[in-house]
Length: 109
Image (tube, rainbow, N blue to C red; front, side):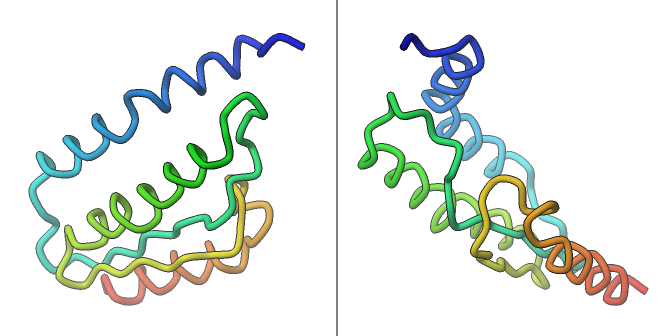
């Protein structure tokens, strides 16, 4: 079975994602002491079967353990929460998203 147009797009995005995202994080400056919570999904349930598991794992490691912690460090009050979830975290764990939004809202007021 040939990959769908969506899967080709995902593959193309994956090829530039780590470089582009890292550059964007570095150029963003910082958020000072504004509260920030970065919610990181631990599972990648939507990886096309054409992508080798070791490549998918390498991307997950880069994303969860390098790029997203960099985002959290943009604020002196930033933190990262790693959630046992896939890409659909708001659907899978709405309570985590609601709690994080509430925590940031409280910290900002």
